[in-house]
Length: 242
Image (cartoon, rainbow, N blue to C red; front, side):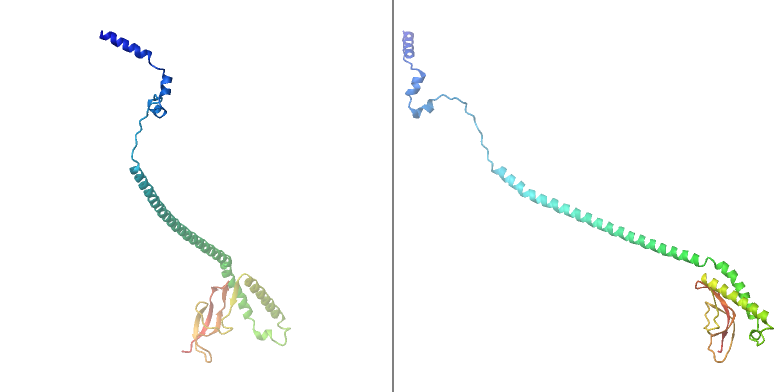
């Protein structure tokens, strides 16, 4: 009995059920959204606090310029040290260069002097051998008495005078040629020079009235110079009053 009653009730409900579209039209507009079927699934979202992250980012941003500043200071110090080392190296190289230039110039000057000395005194040995010949020629001229050269009757001494003139001309030409090559003869007694141990050799000393001490009054052998250097000292007599 109960089953039959339930079956009848269900049939009556089924026959009285309106269509979906009609039912939805009968619902008031303000309640449609509540009864509308869900077309999309709801997505659950989770929210987190961003304040700690912003603080950390601010700290990182504040620390970044400080780190960059330290790196810049370290780089500047390294650059300064490197520049100082380069400056020291440049100074050292410049000093070495100047020393090398000075040494080279000194070497040039020394070589130039040596070459000039070799050129000036190349004939030194030859000149020493030649001065003996000049001395003999000078002695030959000195053996001719002045009285015979100045005699009124020169016809008697014509040959002697001609020989003397020839020797004198030969000596003049020879001394002129030697002077071109730097060899000169000097006689300290002609001008009454003071005794100079670098140029003179005193063979004797004697007192003489009217003359100062250490004055050369006699030349026993004339001296020679080769380009300003004493080739042979003159042998002289010196005044010694005291």
